[in-house]
Length: 425
Image (cartoon, helix red, strand yellow):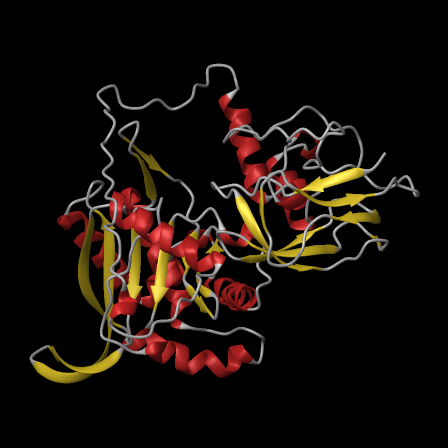
């Protein structure tokens, strides 16, 4: 029986994708995990691997086409080697749309003993957490099980234990109102001179919608500060060539990640999301930090996971490879979701400061401009120091100005005393 493969549930509210390239042809015989298509989602351009081995019978899509979750992408012919398996995201034989799990509903009845779609790193995580992958429903491309799915299965198991209960909203919680404004129609610009209309790319449209959502829903407030990174810059300069020979690119952003994660531990309200409907703050006990990366397609925010627990050199190494994957359009969806706080570093492009927009549904973002040598008074003496401008923008509904100032001061403290970042684990 032919086996259709549909665009899987991409998670985080993603409902469609634009086909950038089809990497197989009808009649090709491919192996599981071989690249099938390149698509551009609301997050970034990613590659979708094959969920099964087999012969491509029909290609249903073409480059430039926008398809919805659940739409057929590829139909595979009957398996001839007995080793292929049906994708978890494959459409039923009747042609009905696949059922979509509700958020948090990531466990499933046992699959049987066929191959489980998960990377070696995810399998290792499952072993460490004691999770049976046969009971986990994958939410990645092609039904692939991701690290987040494994962690969610762990949480679900804990919630279902005797005596456990789901966290409830505060008893006095009330929904918060949402306000929307319809823009007025544009004037006819042609009446004043020639114009050209350039369609927005799928990613640019998404960025526009998300920025509008954030600016409309969140009352932004920004705190300005500066950090003296003279010692930190000296550490980087002393070690950059030695570490580059070992394949590690030591940059200021690595230290910004570590300083922010450690400061978030002490200020958990900034590592959160606001459930406006329930009037509750969701405090996240993990520290997955996004780093804004400029690409020729637009700004993309890959996520560095568990930043608070990882050594600086490991963060530096992963940051370089992750940014490279993003710029080349090879980032996986798991690279781009699950963030709790974002850093955008414009220092390489100059400027004295910027007020960034919060990456919804997060509640805070750190903006960084170019460090400049400045005359600073130290112990009664005017001395040259390398000063780094910082802007912390946060949701005024979840914190006051004094809270933001204290949080920013802790980030500054770690940057000015980098030895503390090496000792705090």
